[in-house]
Image (cartoon, rainbow, N blue to C red; front, side):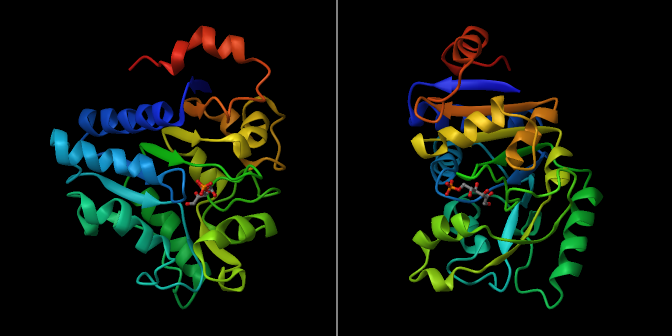
Length: 258
Ligand code: F6R
């Protein structure tokens, strides 16, 4: 795992966005795995800026999002379909037919989960998966105790995730309790993984992911098994790491070779 510590949130966001763009330029038909949430909003803003100001084209990429709330239709304002349209898809030349997000309103959510896992395999798998991390160490909606080899399936949100995500809803009672999410096994199949964690509130999860034991208690610790995982952190998210001198010696200022 490459641990890349940046001196500000802005620097970490710019670095991960540059990394993604590098991959798109190197392989214009690449398959990207995408995340939602507050942390990736500025990452998508940076990708939009690259498109508008530097003519970076996403017209041939294929995307698969990590997850969606069960019960929300794509046009629901709190759905992840809506989030992606607002922050990335609707603002770039990504072709909507090349984007995939699980359908939370599918009549049979279990069948939808199987279809989604098969669709990822059918297009040759994910080249690069973007991840955020929950305060409890979740990736996607793989909450603590998720199987480390899980595939796309229905997961119940942990109470702390319901609380955290309620900031986007009028009332906590409106937050769906179920999601369709890529499994940890699905995520580990991506050829490369880039994860971003920003802020104090992510420092414990970052510590457990990077230096803690490999454990279902911290789902993100499964990234320790991945041969090409990069973790982008700001100072605050890195504040509890005990091997910091080592990470900074290997990657001064969070620099990573191309
Ligand atoms: C959603 C997802 C989640 C978020 C995580 C962090 O697609 O993958 O795992 O990345 O909940 O969310 P924020 O960035 O809002 O703290």
